[in-house]
Image (tube, rainbow, N blue to C red; front, top):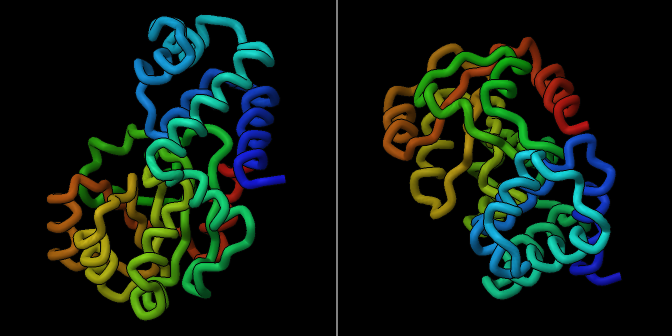
Length: 235
């Protein structure tokens, strides 16, 4: 089975089996970066119909519409250079970035940044007003190894299939280096979490504020405990 077919089966299965198919449809539309209007045009339906499905005002889509949705997502991705397909191949076929990546998962349904903050015993440091946003996955990184080992291309790989994810840096000493790396990157995360320090470097927080990235300091007792709580959200 090719990578296109694998991802198609994964998306269709998630929508059909989801307890909340409306949220699952919206999640995948966001992952692929397609607007409701563009999706509606591809499906030759009204944007209001797409909105109704995503809000739950319409019943769960049947097999025919699910197939059309999946094809629309992937066809649009291929037209734009197959960003999501390539990311899926890299993450779901076991491509190892480096030992810097401690854990990397996608959420079956969108999770609010504020909920992630709660489960990891976090405190918002910058851009707290943005914690209402949806987050679609997380990547836990050893901060020192990430800076020393990851190339610029590999650093982009830690975003998985979407940049709207939480980048969680452990073993942090000051907290400046992760923000410098984010500052020079063309892709910005939906949330940054720091674990393992008491105070964050002021310059790092200034960078985060400028980039409009919410920053949370996790006070989870251990790295292991923090990852356990994150995995529960990904179940």
